[in-house]
Amino acid sequence: MAKGKESKPHIGIYGRRNNGKSSLINCLANQDIAIVSDYAGTTTDPVKKSFEITGFGPVILIDTAGIDDIGELGNKRIEKTLASIKTIDLAILVITNNTFGEFETMLINEFKKSDTPFFIVHNKSDIEKLSEDTKEFILLKSNTEIIEFDTIKANNLELIIKTIKTTIPESSYKTPSLVGDLISYGDIVLLITPIDIEAPAGRIILPQVQAIRDILDNDAVAIVLKEREVDAFLRKTKIKPALAITDSQIFTKADASIPSDIPLTSFSTILARYKGDFESYLKGTPKISELKNGDRILLLESCTHHVSCDDIGRVKIPRWLSNFTGKQLEYEVVSGLDKLPRDITEYALLIQCGGCVITRKQLINRLKPATDAGIPVTNYGMAIAYIQGIYNRAIAPFTKSEQTNIDYL
Image (cartoon, rainbow, N blue to C red; front, side, top):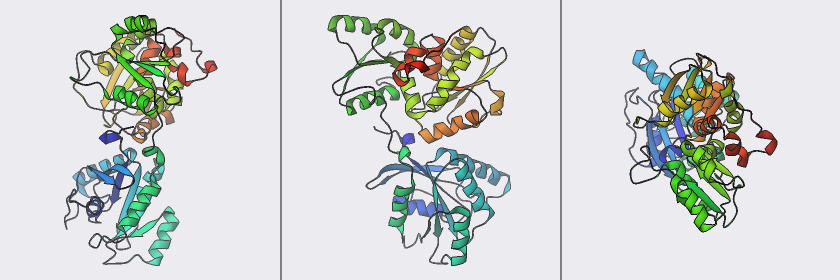
Protein backbone atom coordinates (compact mmCIF):
# COMPACT_ATOMS: atom_id res chain seq x y z
CA MET A 1 0.00 0.00 0.00
CA ALA A 2 1.30 3.46 -0.87
CA LYS A 3 2.53 5.40 2.11
CA GLY A 4 2.04 9.09 2.84
CA LYS A 5 5.05 11.04 3.99
CA GLU A 6 4.23 10.68 7.67
CA SER A 7 3.49 6.96 7.33
CA LYS A 8 7.04 6.10 6.25
CA PRO A 9 9.39 4.53 8.82
CA HIS A 10 10.90 7.24 11.05
CA ILE A 11 14.57 7.13 12.07
CA GLY A 12 15.73 9.52 14.80
CA ILE A 13 19.36 10.63 15.20
CA TYR A 14 20.32 11.38 18.83
CA GLY A 15 23.35 12.40 20.83
CA ARG A 16 25.18 15.31 22.39
CA ARG A 17 25.73 18.66 20.72
CA ASN A 18 28.40 18.76 18.04
CA ASN A 19 28.71 14.97 17.86
CA GLY A 20 28.00 15.03 14.14
CA LYS A 21 24.33 14.04 14.05
CA SER A 22 23.58 16.45 11.21
CA SER A 23 26.71 15.38 9.34
CA LEU A 24 25.64 11.74 9.61
CA ILE A 25 22.25 12.60 8.11
CA ASN A 26 23.95 14.44 5.25
CA CYS A 27 26.16 11.42 4.60
CA LEU A 28 23.20 9.05 4.60
CA ALA A 29 21.19 11.21 2.20
CA ASN A 30 24.24 12.26 0.18
CA GLN A 31 23.14 15.88 0.29
CA ASP A 32 23.24 18.87 2.62
CA ILE A 33 19.83 18.60 4.22
CA ALA A 34 20.84 19.43 7.79
CA ILE A 35 22.73 22.46 9.10
CA VAL A 36 26.31 21.56 9.99
CA SER A 37 28.39 23.86 12.18
CA ASP A 38 31.43 23.79 14.44
CA TYR A 39 29.33 25.46 17.10
CA ALA A 40 27.45 23.26 19.54
CA GLY A 41 23.67 23.58 19.61
CA THR A 42 23.08 24.49 15.96
CA THR A 43 20.11 22.14 15.60
CA THR A 44 17.02 23.40 17.45
CA ASP A 45 13.67 21.70 16.82
CA PRO A 46 13.69 18.18 15.35
CA VAL A 47 14.04 18.45 11.56
CA LYS A 48 12.56 15.83 9.19
CA LYS A 49 13.82 14.80 5.78
CA SER A 50 12.66 12.07 3.41
CA PHE A 51 15.36 9.68 2.20
CA GLU A 52 15.21 6.66 -0.12
CA ILE A 53 17.26 3.62 0.94
CA THR A 54 18.08 1.57 -2.14
CA GLY A 55 16.56 -1.88 -1.96
CA PHE A 56 14.50 -0.93 1.08
CA GLY A 57 12.29 2.09 0.43
CA PRO A 58 11.58 5.60 1.70
CA VAL A 59 12.22 6.61 5.30
CA ILE A 60 12.09 9.84 7.30
CA LEU A 61 15.31 10.95 8.99
CA ILE A 62 14.87 13.13 12.08
CA ASP A 63 17.72 15.39 13.22
CA THR A 64 17.34 16.26 16.91
CA ALA A 65 18.83 18.85 19.24
CA GLY A 66 21.71 17.84 21.51
CA ILE A 67 20.67 15.95 24.63
CA ASP A 68 23.25 17.97 26.62
CA ASP A 69 21.85 21.39 25.64
CA ILE A 70 21.91 24.09 28.31
CA GLY A 71 19.86 27.05 29.50
CA GLU A 72 16.11 27.59 29.47
CA LEU A 73 15.91 27.35 25.67
CA GLY A 74 18.16 24.29 25.76
CA ASN A 75 15.83 22.55 28.19
CA LYS A 76 12.94 23.14 25.79
CA ARG A 77 15.01 21.65 22.96
CA ILE A 78 15.82 18.59 25.09
CA GLU A 79 12.12 18.20 25.89
CA LYS A 80 11.30 18.11 22.16
CA THR A 81 14.16 15.70 21.50
CA LEU A 82 12.87 13.27 24.13
CA ALA A 83 9.28 13.67 22.92
CA SER A 84 10.34 12.68 19.39
CA ILE A 85 11.37 9.20 20.62
CA LYS A 86 7.69 8.24 20.84
CA THR A 87 7.27 9.02 17.14
CA ILE A 88 10.14 6.98 15.67
CA ASP A 89 10.64 3.36 14.61
CA LEU A 90 14.44 3.27 14.98
CA ALA A 91 17.01 5.36 16.87
CA ILE A 92 20.67 5.96 16.06
CA LEU A 93 22.73 7.20 19.00
CA VAL A 94 25.81 9.16 17.92
CA ILE A 95 28.78 9.39 20.29
CA THR A 96 32.32 10.73 19.88
CA ASN A 97 35.68 10.76 21.67
CA ASN A 98 34.88 7.60 23.65
CA THR A 99 32.37 9.63 25.65
CA PHE A 100 29.49 7.64 27.06
CA GLY A 101 27.80 8.78 30.26
CA GLU A 102 24.56 9.93 31.85
CA PHE A 103 23.18 11.59 28.70
CA GLU A 104 23.63 8.47 26.61
CA THR A 105 22.26 6.27 29.39
CA MET A 106 19.18 8.50 29.66
CA LEU A 107 18.55 8.23 25.92
CA ILE A 108 18.92 4.45 25.96
CA ASN A 109 16.46 4.22 28.87
CA GLU A 110 13.98 6.30 26.86
CA PHE A 111 14.49 4.07 23.80
CA LYS A 112 13.77 1.00 25.88
CA LYS A 113 10.77 2.60 27.58
CA SER A 114 9.07 3.15 24.21
CA ASP A 115 10.24 -0.22 22.78
CA THR A 116 12.35 1.57 20.16
CA PRO A 117 15.24 -0.46 18.67
CA PHE A 118 18.54 1.37 18.36
CA PHE A 119 22.21 1.08 17.57
CA ILE A 120 25.25 3.28 18.24
CA VAL A 121 27.58 5.13 15.88
CA HIS A 122 30.96 6.23 17.21
CA ASN A 123 31.56 9.28 15.01
CA LYS A 124 34.80 11.19 14.28
CA SER A 125 36.75 7.96 14.45
CA ASP A 126 39.44 9.65 12.33
CA ILE A 127 40.21 11.79 15.39
CA GLU A 128 39.83 9.14 18.08
CA LYS A 129 39.12 5.45 17.68
CA LEU A 130 36.71 3.61 19.94
CA SER A 131 38.67 2.08 22.80
CA GLU A 132 38.12 -1.46 24.01
CA ASP A 133 37.25 -0.17 27.49
CA THR A 134 34.55 2.13 26.10
CA LYS A 135 33.25 -0.62 23.85
CA GLU A 136 32.96 -3.07 26.75
CA PHE A 137 31.26 -0.43 28.91
CA ILE A 138 28.72 0.40 26.19
CA LEU A 139 27.97 -3.25 25.53
CA LEU A 140 27.43 -3.74 29.25
CA LYS A 141 24.97 -0.82 29.35
CA SER A 142 23.18 -1.29 26.04
CA ASN A 143 24.03 -4.67 24.49
CA THR A 144 23.73 -3.23 21.00
CA GLU A 145 25.85 -2.86 17.89
CA ILE A 146 28.50 -0.10 17.76
CA ILE A 147 29.75 1.15 14.40
CA GLU A 148 32.93 3.22 13.90
CA PHE A 149 32.31 6.12 11.53
CA ASP A 150 33.96 9.18 10.05
CA THR A 151 31.68 11.63 8.25
CA ILE A 152 34.63 13.06 6.30
CA LYS A 153 35.58 9.75 4.66
CA ALA A 154 32.12 8.23 5.10
CA ASN A 155 33.68 4.91 6.02
CA ASN A 156 31.31 2.16 7.11
CA LEU A 157 28.38 4.05 5.55
CA GLU A 158 27.15 0.86 3.89
CA LEU A 159 27.38 -0.93 7.23
CA ILE A 160 25.20 1.75 8.84
CA ILE A 161 22.61 1.41 6.06
CA LYS A 162 22.72 -2.38 6.35
CA THR A 163 22.21 -2.09 10.12
CA ILE A 164 19.24 0.21 9.57
CA LYS A 165 17.69 -2.41 7.28
CA THR A 166 18.22 -5.26 9.75
CA THR A 167 17.33 -3.36 12.93
CA ILE A 168 14.21 -1.42 11.97
CA PRO A 169 11.04 -3.42 12.81
CA GLU A 170 9.24 -5.00 9.86
CA SER A 171 5.96 -3.65 11.27
CA SER A 172 7.13 -0.12 10.40
CA TYR A 173 7.28 -0.81 6.66
CA LYS A 174 5.52 -4.14 6.04
CA THR A 175 1.95 -3.23 6.80
CA PRO A 176 -0.93 -5.71 6.88
CA SER A 177 -3.75 -5.51 4.42
CA LEU A 178 -6.79 -3.44 5.35
CA VAL A 179 -9.36 -5.98 4.16
CA GLY A 180 -7.32 -8.73 2.49
CA ASP A 181 -8.45 -11.36 5.00
CA LEU A 182 -12.12 -10.44 4.45
CA ILE A 183 -12.28 -10.71 0.65
CA SER A 184 -11.26 -13.12 -2.09
CA TYR A 185 -10.22 -12.91 -5.72
CA GLY A 186 -12.88 -11.20 -7.82
CA ASP A 187 -15.04 -10.11 -4.86
CA ILE A 188 -16.96 -6.86 -5.16
CA VAL A 189 -16.53 -4.33 -2.36
CA LEU A 190 -18.94 -1.41 -2.09
CA LEU A 191 -17.38 1.85 -0.83
CA ILE A 192 -19.95 4.40 0.35
CA THR A 193 -18.29 7.82 0.25
CA PRO A 194 -20.37 10.93 0.93
CA ILE A 195 -19.26 14.13 -0.76
CA ASP A 196 -20.00 16.84 1.80
CA ILE A 197 -18.48 20.00 3.23
CA GLU A 198 -15.60 18.01 4.81
CA ALA A 199 -14.65 16.23 1.59
CA PRO A 200 -11.55 17.87 0.02
CA ALA A 201 -12.23 19.61 -3.29
CA GLY A 202 -11.45 17.45 -6.31
CA ARG A 203 -10.44 14.34 -4.34
CA ILE A 204 -11.50 11.88 -1.67
CA ILE A 205 -10.04 11.44 1.79
CA LEU A 206 -6.98 9.29 2.45
CA PRO A 207 -8.69 6.30 4.17
CA GLN A 208 -10.94 5.91 1.14
CA VAL A 209 -7.95 6.05 -1.21
CA GLN A 210 -6.14 3.46 0.92
CA ALA A 211 -9.17 1.16 0.86
CA ILE A 212 -9.45 1.35 -2.93
CA ARG A 213 -5.76 0.52 -3.34
CA ASP A 214 -5.94 -2.35 -0.87
CA ILE A 215 -8.96 -3.86 -2.63
CA LEU A 216 -7.15 -3.68 -5.98
CA ASP A 217 -4.00 -5.18 -4.43
CA ASN A 218 -6.13 -8.13 -3.35
CA ASP A 219 -7.46 -8.64 -6.90
CA ALA A 220 -10.98 -7.62 -5.97
CA VAL A 221 -13.31 -4.98 -7.44
CA ALA A 222 -14.01 -1.63 -5.77
CA ILE A 223 -17.26 0.17 -6.53
CA VAL A 224 -17.37 3.72 -5.18
CA LEU A 225 -20.64 5.62 -4.84
CA LYS A 226 -22.38 8.22 -2.70
CA GLU A 227 -24.87 7.21 -0.02
CA ARG A 228 -27.94 8.29 -1.96
CA GLU A 229 -27.00 5.99 -4.87
CA VAL A 230 -26.76 2.78 -2.83
CA ASP A 231 -30.41 1.70 -2.95
CA ALA A 232 -30.72 2.26 -6.70
CA PHE A 233 -27.41 0.49 -7.40
CA LEU A 234 -28.36 -2.64 -5.47
CA ARG A 235 -31.84 -2.71 -6.97
CA LYS A 236 -30.79 -2.19 -10.60
CA THR A 237 -27.65 -4.33 -10.70
CA LYS A 238 -28.72 -7.22 -8.42
CA ILE A 239 -25.06 -7.34 -7.33
CA LYS A 240 -24.40 -8.74 -3.87
CA PRO A 241 -21.14 -7.25 -2.55
CA ALA A 242 -18.86 -9.41 -0.42
CA LEU A 243 -18.31 -6.40 1.85
CA ALA A 244 -19.56 -2.82 2.20
CA ILE A 245 -17.53 -0.05 3.78
CA THR A 246 -19.08 3.28 4.68
CA ASP A 247 -18.09 6.64 6.03
CA SER A 248 -18.87 6.62 9.76
CA GLN A 249 -21.01 9.73 9.62
CA ILE A 250 -23.68 8.07 7.46
CA PHE A 251 -23.47 4.65 9.09
CA THR A 252 -27.17 4.67 10.02
CA LYS A 253 -28.24 5.25 6.43
CA ALA A 254 -25.80 2.62 5.16
CA ASP A 255 -27.09 0.15 7.76
CA ALA A 256 -30.63 0.66 6.44
CA SER A 257 -29.56 0.35 2.80
CA ILE A 258 -27.20 -2.64 2.98
CA PRO A 259 -28.99 -6.01 3.50
CA SER A 260 -28.13 -7.69 6.80
CA ASP A 261 -26.51 -10.66 5.08
CA ILE A 262 -23.82 -8.37 3.58
CA PRO A 263 -20.98 -7.53 6.01
CA LEU A 264 -20.86 -3.78 6.69
CA THR A 265 -18.20 -1.75 8.46
CA SER A 266 -16.62 1.71 8.24
CA PHE A 267 -13.39 3.18 6.92
CA SER A 268 -12.53 4.29 10.43
CA THR A 269 -13.11 0.82 11.86
CA ILE A 270 -10.84 -0.89 9.33
CA LEU A 271 -8.18 1.76 10.08
CA ALA A 272 -8.64 1.06 13.80
CA ARG A 273 -7.80 -2.60 13.23
CA TYR A 274 -5.05 -1.87 10.70
CA LYS A 275 -3.19 0.79 12.67
CA GLY A 276 -4.66 1.32 16.14
CA ASP A 277 -4.87 -0.70 19.34
CA PHE A 278 -7.93 -2.63 18.18
CA GLU A 279 -8.21 -4.89 21.24
CA SER A 280 -8.22 -1.86 23.53
CA TYR A 281 -10.80 -0.19 21.29
CA LEU A 282 -13.05 -3.25 21.58
CA LYS A 283 -12.79 -3.11 25.37
CA GLY A 284 -13.06 0.66 25.64
CA THR A 285 -15.91 1.51 23.27
CA PRO A 286 -18.73 0.00 25.40
CA LYS A 287 -17.52 2.17 28.32
CA ILE A 288 -19.36 5.02 26.59
CA SER A 289 -22.50 3.72 28.32
CA GLU A 290 -20.84 4.22 31.72
CA LEU A 291 -20.01 7.94 31.33
CA LYS A 292 -21.22 10.20 34.15
CA ASN A 293 -22.02 13.88 34.54
CA GLY A 294 -18.85 15.98 34.61
CA ASP A 295 -16.67 13.36 32.88
CA ARG A 296 -13.98 14.82 30.63
CA ILE A 297 -13.51 13.34 27.14
CA LEU A 298 -10.27 13.71 25.16
CA LEU A 299 -10.48 13.64 21.36
CA LEU A 300 -7.19 13.09 19.54
CA GLU A 301 -6.80 14.28 15.94
CA SER A 302 -3.63 12.99 14.31
CA CYS A 303 -3.56 15.74 11.71
CA THR A 304 -4.15 19.46 11.73
CA HIS A 305 -6.84 20.76 9.39
CA HIS A 306 -9.21 23.63 8.81
CA VAL A 307 -12.07 23.27 11.26
CA SER A 308 -15.51 23.49 9.65
CA CYS A 309 -18.74 24.43 11.40
CA ASP A 310 -19.75 20.75 11.37
CA ASP A 311 -16.36 19.21 12.14
CA ILE A 312 -16.54 15.50 12.95
CA GLY A 313 -14.21 15.53 15.98
CA ARG A 314 -14.93 18.95 17.44
CA VAL A 315 -18.65 19.27 16.76
CA LYS A 316 -20.46 16.13 15.66
CA ILE A 317 -19.01 13.49 18.00
CA PRO A 318 -19.39 15.67 21.12
CA ARG A 319 -22.99 16.45 20.14
CA TRP A 320 -23.85 12.82 19.42
CA LEU A 321 -22.10 11.59 22.57
CA SER A 322 -23.90 14.06 24.82
CA ASN A 323 -27.26 13.22 23.25
CA PHE A 324 -26.64 9.47 23.51
CA THR A 325 -25.56 9.48 27.17
CA GLY A 326 -27.85 12.31 28.33
CA LYS A 327 -24.95 13.48 30.51
CA GLN A 328 -23.21 16.83 30.94
CA LEU A 329 -19.76 16.03 29.52
CA GLU A 330 -16.65 18.14 28.97
CA TYR A 331 -14.58 17.84 25.78
CA GLU A 332 -10.99 18.68 24.88
CA VAL A 333 -9.40 18.25 21.44
CA VAL A 334 -5.67 17.87 20.77
CA SER A 335 -4.32 17.96 17.21
CA GLY A 336 -1.22 16.32 15.78
CA LEU A 337 1.19 14.98 18.39
CA ASP A 338 0.89 18.01 20.67
CA LYS A 339 1.34 17.70 24.42
CA LEU A 340 -1.83 16.95 26.39
CA PRO A 341 -3.20 19.91 28.39
CA ARG A 342 -3.59 17.83 31.55
CA ASP A 343 -2.68 14.48 33.10
CA ILE A 344 -4.21 11.51 31.29
CA THR A 345 -5.89 10.28 34.49
CA GLU A 346 -8.19 13.32 34.44
CA TYR A 347 -10.03 11.92 31.41
CA ALA A 348 -12.83 9.36 31.53
CA LEU A 349 -12.51 8.38 27.86
CA LEU A 350 -10.09 8.92 24.98
CA ILE A 351 -11.38 8.96 21.38
CA GLN A 352 -8.68 8.68 18.68
CA CYS A 353 -9.20 9.50 15.00
CA GLY A 354 -8.28 6.95 12.34
CA GLY A 355 -4.65 8.09 12.30
CA CYS A 356 -4.32 7.79 8.53
CA VAL A 357 -1.42 10.29 8.32
CA ILE A 358 0.79 8.91 11.12
CA THR A 359 2.64 5.66 11.71
CA ARG A 360 1.25 2.82 13.79
CA LYS A 361 4.10 3.33 16.29
CA GLN A 362 3.12 6.97 16.74
CA LEU A 363 -0.52 6.08 17.23
CA ILE A 364 0.16 3.25 19.69
CA ASN A 365 2.48 5.48 21.74
CA ARG A 366 -0.18 8.18 21.66
CA LEU A 367 -2.66 5.77 23.26
CA LYS A 368 -0.20 4.07 25.62
CA PRO A 369 -0.45 6.53 28.57
CA ALA A 370 -4.22 6.00 28.59
CA THR A 371 -4.12 2.20 28.28
CA ASP A 372 -1.37 2.01 30.93
CA ALA A 373 -3.54 4.10 33.27
CA GLY A 374 -6.65 2.01 32.58
CA ILE A 375 -8.44 4.84 30.75
CA PRO A 376 -10.90 3.45 28.14
CA VAL A 377 -9.94 4.23 24.54
CA THR A 378 -11.95 4.07 21.35
CA ASN A 379 -11.77 5.55 17.87
CA TYR A 380 -13.98 7.91 15.89
CA GLY A 381 -15.70 5.29 13.76
CA MET A 382 -16.21 2.73 16.51
CA ALA A 383 -17.59 5.39 18.88
CA ILE A 384 -19.99 6.64 16.21
CA ALA A 385 -21.15 3.09 15.45
CA TYR A 386 -21.77 2.48 19.15
CA ILE A 387 -23.69 5.72 19.58
CA GLN A 388 -25.82 4.93 16.54
CA GLY A 389 -26.62 1.42 17.78
CA ILE A 390 -24.80 -0.46 15.02
CA TYR A 391 -21.53 -1.25 16.79
CA ASN A 392 -22.11 -5.00 16.63
CA ARG A 393 -22.46 -4.88 12.86
CA ALA A 394 -19.42 -2.62 12.45
CA ILE A 395 -17.05 -4.96 14.27
CA ALA A 396 -18.65 -8.26 13.22
CA PRO A 397 -16.39 -8.74 10.16
CA PHE A 398 -13.33 -8.70 12.45
CA THR A 399 -14.52 -10.56 15.56
CA LYS A 400 -16.03 -13.88 16.53
CA SER A 401 -19.76 -13.91 17.03
CA GLU A 402 -19.50 -14.45 20.80
CA GLN A 403 -17.48 -11.23 21.08
CA THR A 404 -20.14 -9.01 19.57
CA ASN A 405 -22.90 -9.23 22.18
CA ILE A 406 -22.79 -5.63 23.36
CA ASP A 407 -25.69 -4.18 25.34
CA TYR A 408 -26.77 -0.59 24.78
CA LEU A 409 -28.52 1.97 26.95
